[in-house]
Length: 519
View (cartoon, one colour):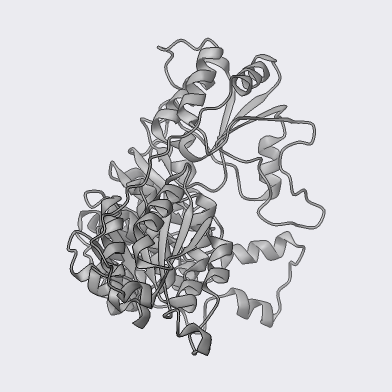
């Protein structure tokens, strides 16, 4: 048994049985160890941003960490953007990053770098595995840290000599100690209940597990009984949605719309969320979105047991256990467009209408898919995953990881064309693994959200230089050709009729497929 074998055994013993990998020379002993352990599913990605994004999507749906395998500092650096997104989502993740053998680092070889320094900004916890005998304890500690609610990014650095050195004695894996979420205080429950009883407008601002089915159902009962407002944070790790779930809108992205949505609030009650802030600063617009006079009360933080906190709040408020949860009235008009020019609104309406039950919907539509949240309130029950940290390029990898976590569920990506190009290699992994992923590319052939941001900062007339930086033309991206080159069947559509037919075909398909929707 060498260090690499011990590392693989330790991961498996702690229920880490998927490894998203893009290895290099310094990781070859670990690759050999993985080859001796068929219990570990090894998934190759052709770019490290795909690896870390897929680990994020996997953990959101599997509710446990995946491992990643990355090559030295530069390989880790390539994956940092989606590690940033995972850190903002508080997704559990364990990165294994190879490094030069300890005796070789002093020679400043071309790939020598400060791996710890690169890892720390996007990790909650970093550890260099200095000796093979300590690997079991190192892995157990990483799993404990990663699994602490609501989740942490942990990076283990594996020097090549630690991997290849034989252990003097056979070593048994060390099992991580499970950690339960802490409960909120009685004072926090009483403070939230007092605010709701005050008669002044109060709002339950929900995040993390509070947006999952059980906790959200309790929030809906509180809303129904106490006539208190509920709202989801603006960027969501995972939300239970659809006709049989408590309907909830999320905080709008534009500053003016967000401020208007919160303008009435006198008591802002945080449940697994943080006080809302603007995504960016703009001239003459606020950074803090809640009214200045609003009282901010933390019922429970994301580290705490949010379902218990909502149960306790319902009990404190005297909400009867048989109170029906809040539901929307049946819509009067469920018609959808059947012909005409294709646009983002029509795609959202049609997709919401035909969304299969138990779908995992991965949303990186940025601008053109914003209507989907509104039209899918009465859709079939589904899980909704979203870009959390604002570093674009998460959508396709996130869907890849979600599909590996949930092989029996359809995974649909609602995907902007510009951000999809950041990690287009994820399509190849979907094809190689025969994943049940349907990608809908909303091809407006521009960074449309940046056109809006130019208007937000007061620029209304764009010259040629600005247009060349914001438009995806000369040449246009050819998504059907890109997908075919990765082994994914694809079709291009430009009308409501052709999109509806392509969606029907894609929902019935097994394995990955892509629709390029020209809008």
